Image 1: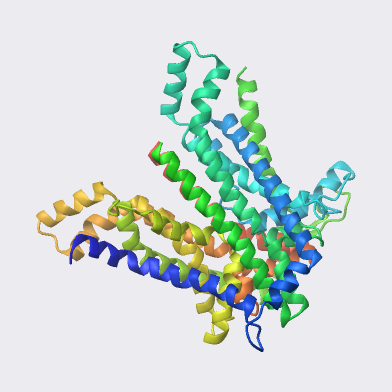
Image 2 (image 1 turned 90 degrees about the horizontal axis):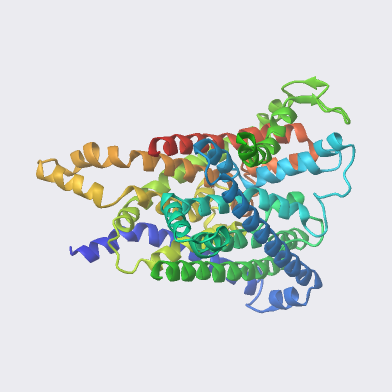
Length: 270
Length: 253
């Protein structure tokens, strides 16, 4: 067997399993969105979805939460990376703490602290607003900022090694001021991990499900929780509407995935 | 001066660690009426609920699915990770895209899509169905992490083993495994963690056989103490992953 044929054979188990499971999942939601449990294929679910004002509200809400959470995580991640750049292993380990912690757990902790009667209210004697069920989604944004800022920071810190330090010092020797070093040496290095990290965060938040179930408002839902509610509300027709909504979020995430690949390739090629 | 320089790091640490510490207090707070800052009565009621009939079964399901998914993912990922880690493909872009896509599509969408077929195959609500659904997300992570263990260095060592007359099995036993063991261990831990954390996929394919996160969610509003106790159990593998990561970082440094 030639080297190339052998490589393909070695890749086959993983690639075929993934193609089958992931392709099957996408085909599954596509099918559910057009073929109702009883009857022939039709576009009723899509018509219902697109004419439902609740779907429009969920779409707007999802985009808003995604945009704000991503910007918050990126800004906080950059600040964290700056604060911990010259710190040792322990500080980085503590920084890494929220990365493996499940989203659901962070949301649970947010409820224990911030819900009415929670710990923050006891400590402060009262809270000016209910973050947990905030209609603008502040609770969701807070959970994602806490969870994803360290993720972004670790990606940024990964390029802030001795090599970058040496280039900054070289620029200083050449007479570049602090601002100029930041603009022409540091920023070009951290831009790629920052953008790639942010796109990944955006894809995560767009599909967020358990976080809004716990700390989101009852209405509007995110697209994923909108889909879940549709299946709970109408057991027959709801499945199709839910699948159509999920297919739209998935398409959005696929576009973001392509953007990451594209950006990573441009960076590598540059 | 030294204090001023340490301040940002201190604030960062507190901001990250302090929020999670509430779980330790809440989990053992048998009675905690506001506005008291500490519980009036400490006890183990939370863990009695958390390890009781329903949640206990969910814990077992999560463990079984996590272990099975991890083992399956490692076995399936190994050959692919080898090819990718040794950079033997001229154009690996398509493979990496296939690996990235499942990680970015909402897990609830993946679970809902698979349910369409699992209903026909009798896999909904089964352990096998849960493992397959989790594999969709765990397998890409496993390949991406495992490939860092392979490379020209290992290949050179294996060539030496071959030249020294070691058989295939002997090379695997004496050369390959010792070299990749740390990577495999870290990958296994993270693979388990990804399965352990799944919410949307599990809820979609097995609503009748809940996993730990699925039983945890309703407790958060209904019984904060039980929720905190379940959360501590839920947190344990993540902390183990962190300890392993720190030890690896120390060794690398």
